[in-house]
Length: 314
Image (cartoon, rainbow, N blue to C red; front, top):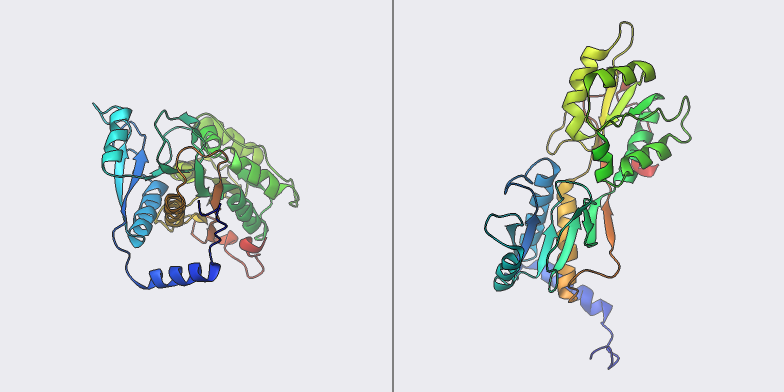
């Protein structure tokens, strides 16, 4: 109706209202849902997802909302009944936590819900998405290592880890190494599961100066590097595409998962205010870029140098 009558919001008044609202504590607005799909109720509460949830809950509180956990696989509770419970509690917005497996499909009644998915693991429905900018993060990581005169940089992780992020790790690695000096991109080591003997064969053949991996494989690879190093070969450093949540020992990208969770809540609340409910016709992706974190896993000879480039400006 407002559109038919030719109404146009006044941007200055909108800015003033936003400013004034920011000066006072938000009154209770309602509840948002945190929807999980793991086999167990607390199975989601690991690693980066703890950071996503912490950021989402804090931002929800700042905006006057409470964040309630809903588990899709609760015994004795059908999904239709779960949807009825959400309606009875006037839940209009959902943050869908990352799925336990890539390419997951969820059958659920999304009508009347402003829903946002965290990450790429939910294949259907195609909701609006908020996630780390994994491609840009690993390009920045490679640029950081190249700035330290590292040339032989290898990529190691279970294939499912790269599959889970729609191959952004591999893509970012190949792009980052495309114009690198030296041998360029080394053959990746992406087995179905990491196995010591296979890793040693790859390691001895490729002789990487630094191995790039992800947080779930870090401890295993670190232990293998000590056992696999041939005599006379310097031990490789280790850099992670996503350092463990609230840990500082590893060098790599800090994805700032709290910012991802907070951004997801911002999107959900905005959708509620605009009456945007259900599965969108064209899903939007919001990607949060991380920053390099200087840990201790690269080894002394690869510590930061004054002439290293700023990966955020690369």
